[in-house]
Image (cartoon, rainbow, N blue to C red; front, side, top):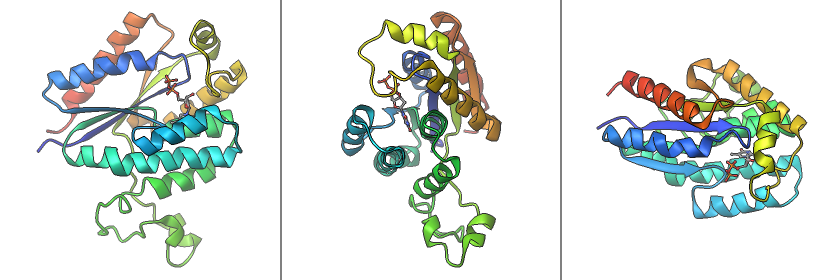
Length: 240
Ligand code: TYD
């Protein structure tokens, strides 16, 4: 059976990523792959309800981060993990990098706390991948102490590839000005998106091998060509 592939798409609002995801789906299907198109927050009935709340209601920063991860956990368990187990390609419009970028960078929420939530929610053992690694499913259950946590990094579900549509926030602001009614995040000032962009750059610097940066300031057609080239090369390089 072919190996499942988990590809995520990221960028500040107005970077135009959604338009290109459908092309990537076509590209994968043309290679004979079954594709699951999904998004975060969302992707399951419960996660879509959480999306509605988190995008439209004002709330405390920790509440917001917890709801993002709660929606993600449900999405992983119900949709992402089963699809990957069937050998399918999961194309996800945003994932955890968005939480680090928006809640971490944009809202200024503590990066380490987000890291703890990431380890808890994306822990592969807790997602049903056996207990052969010797890790507790939940970091907070780790027998012993913080030392155990510090020395044993649990294996996590992470994207195999993250396509980052990188754009100067002043350009995205011009694009968003003519768009539909903005949600809670889209209505933020340029400084917020500058911080979101910087946080994406920080995530990329932490795991550069996972990221493909696309210059989203280019015209839509050139961005599309870049995406197709990056994806074609990357899919080609994947083991069967
Ligand atoms: P977006 O993906 O841009 O969808 P649409 O194109 O339909 O507007 O909207 C999702 C918003 O949620 C976006 O502003 C970023 C935000 N978000 C977070 O703040 N944290 C997260 O963890 C995720 C996944 C999204």
